[in-house]
Structure formats: structure tokens, C-alpha cells
View 1 (cartoon, rainbow, N blue to C red):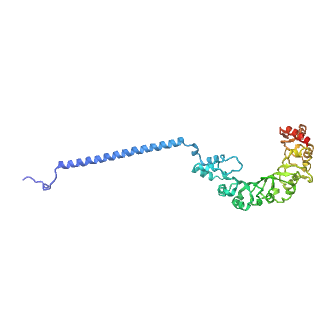
View 2: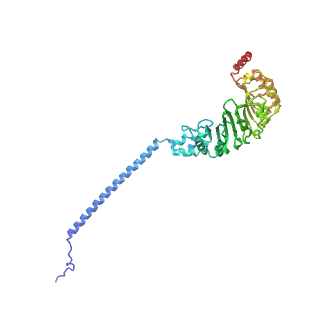
View 3: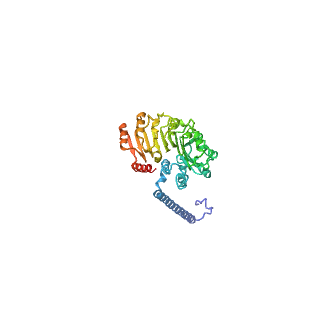
Length: 396
């Protein structure tokens, strides 16, 4: 009896149907895979196109942007220093450096604001109306030495309160006095680090605030310039402050040559002095020897001093003198000056006859004989001025 199949009782589907279903399923999977492949390819093309755009954009930025944008901060800082106006003191202006530099871009502003040397020179005009802006400017100076020019009109208490944080770093100060309103003097001793002071007065009448201002000077002061008002001898005698002996450079407007010997006594360390004004002849001065003065500049009024025996070089002896400059003195006191040179035995190096100050060719030759290496300079228009003064003297 033949052997029977033990699985014949199971109801299996036909083999062909099963194979057909499997083939259909595989075709569906292939179709889905193809779609995915197409999507991936499309995304890859998008990424490539975006990368190309980025590269092109960067290339265009590099090609057309200013090279200064790529400069290091240190180089920009040096360039900024040369952008400042040539003025000795800067008035805040939006179209001028340093404020202009803060408006270009964020990076420039950060560099400019953090550079103290850009903010160490300031002119304060009508400071009360712009106190906030001036304070912002000065704060940016950090600890850099300050150079200030101030219009002073008598309200020292308010001005002092405003300047208080910056007084210790103020090394140069210019005070413009307005005599119509200035009555309270400036306490100069508050400026402990002050090295240079300039006093200027507007108007003809002397401001009552100037004299007490000069009576208390900081001991740090070395240079003093007083363009106005003119000082007479009795006014200079009011200054007994101990700071005057420390002054080495002095420019002053005077009335009468009697002031020079007194100035030399007040300032034993003086090496440079300029005097201008009405140079009336010396009357009561006691002779003085000053060992430190190296440069003497004298400027008068040729119509007042011409032909007068001024007596200036009869009372002073300056053994260290190297330079003499005169202007508007009229005919030069030749014999008096020659005796002064012989007495002083100074190493004179330069002699300048400025405008309206005359020395003849023979006189200049005598000076060259005394000092073979002496440089003598004479204003080319002096002959014309000499003729005008002679006509003036004949007329009167």
C-alpha cells in the first residue's frame, strides 16, 4: 500500500498566488525607495546651490567692502589719533572727530570711546548749557592728562563742582575772563597737577577776579602766560605766593620796564621770559643778577620807546643768556647792550631784531666780533619802519 502524505490535511494556497503577492509587494517597495532617492537627490542639489550662493556672497563682500574694515583695532586707533582737528582745544561737533568717529559703526564707536587720548583736549563754551555733554566727553579721557580752555564768568563755585573729578588730571588750563561778570576768583591751588596756565581777559577794563586768581598758584605750575591785562610794578608786588619761584617760562603783558627786575626776583628758576606792552624806562630798579635765564623776548611800542634811554640792560646781568629777541623797540640801545654783554659774559647764540627794532650793519658787525658763532636775524622791513618813525618824530 503506497505511503500517504502526512500534511495533506492542511489547506495551503496555491504556490503561484503566493509568488504573485510577493512580487507585487516588492514592486511597491521599489517604488517607495525610488521616491526617497529622488527626494535625497533634490535636497543635495539645494544644499549645493545654497553653498554656491554663500561663497559668491562672501566673495562679493570681500571685493566691494572697504579694506579699512579688516584693519586690526590697534591700527584703527592710531589712525583715529590723526583724525582730530589741529585746534589746540576741541569744541564738540557732530561733523568732526572724535564725535564723528562714534557715528560710523558700532566697532568704530567702541574703539573711539575707549581711546582716552581722543578726549583729553576740550574747550568749554557756556559750559552750564552743555554740562552733560562735557561731562561725558571728560569721562572718556579716563586718567589721561587734560588740556582745558574755559570761559570764566564768575560762577566759580558751580564750575568748581563740575570740574572737581577732573582737577587732579588737568595739566594745561586756559582761562578766558569776561570782566563784566567775573567777580569771584578761581582757586588755582585746586589744580594740583597743573603745569601750564594761560590767562586772557576780554575787554579793556581789568577783571577784579584775575589778581586774586594769580595770588594762589599750584606749586606744580611751570609755565604761565598772561596776555591781558597789563601789570604794573605795584600789582606784581601783591603776589607773594611761594609757587612763583617754581615757574620756568613766563609770558606777561607789562607797563614799565621796572617790572622785569622784580619778575627776575620773583622767579629765580626762570629760563624763558617774554615781555610786551608799554615799556617805559626803568626808574628805581635795583641791579640784579639772574643765573638761570636763557631766553629774553621784549616787545614794546616803537612810537613810545623810540629814542628813549630805557635803561633795561643797565640793571640786569644774565650770565646764562643764549637768545635775545626784540620787536617794536625802535633804535636798539647799542652801547648799553654791548656793556651788558661784556658784564654778563654770557654764551649768546642768537640775536633777533624783529619788526620795528633797528640795529645798524656796523652795530651788528660789532656783536659778531664779540661772538664769532652768533646768529643775527633782522626783519627785512625794518628800514621802512625806521623811516616811518623818523617822520613821526619830526611831526611831533
